[in-house]
Picture 1 (tube, rainbow, N blue to C red):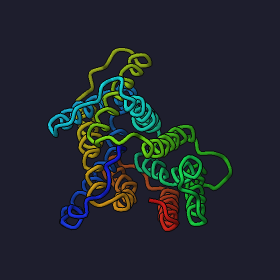
Picture 2 (cartoon, rainbow, N blue to C red):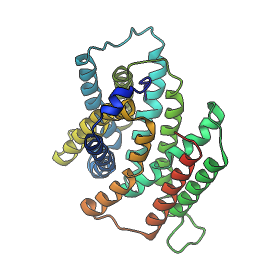
Picture 3 (tube, rainbow, N blue to C red):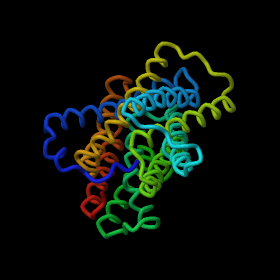
Length: 305
């Protein structure tokens, strides 16, 4: 998201392996469960207001953390606000809305698998907008991921008709594209402390999401108990604490470790969806999950971070 600078070798070498493992398990759980909580919340709460509530909770927490850590937001005339306004749209507000609407009909596990294509989409975008170019292995990995997506869009009888909820799946795939765009944009932002960048992004995202929710869904509703718990879990866990933890892992262990952690998020989401939401296991889910994850691994062998 924001640049964290070079990795401090002293912190990396002094990092306890068990601590890193515990943090990795935490991130896998909160990110994997995020899709489950969204799937539950949209049953009784407007998708647009869910995003507004989620981002408002996260913005308050991260802003408080940033101030506690001794950081201050830059003046409004600073160009960083422009950069993080764009990232707020592509990396939070828009994909959160797309995911919430898509999950009205798409299971949480399938959602996580579709979002798991983000690294593959990033590879293609980076070829055109950064100095990082496609290699043969990266291209093979991308094509494998594309095959995995095709499997998800085809019905179980393997005809060439599209699945009935293909439009909802496409919304989720567009959210994955937004995350990939954000990754490319974030690599070009001015040097900014990570807590400050996260606070700016979430503040702007919360404001934009609230305006959109009010315009599209009317006055803010009062969530029922279940939806309220999901909002708090999403805002506190998968959006606020997870963002700070994510930046810490990048700083002390590097992006390659974070990439390996992300491999297990769709797996966690599928398991939680089956256990908590009684979602059905379709053979296409297993095939697509395997092919997409294998595609990501192959692309990493081609030199992607």
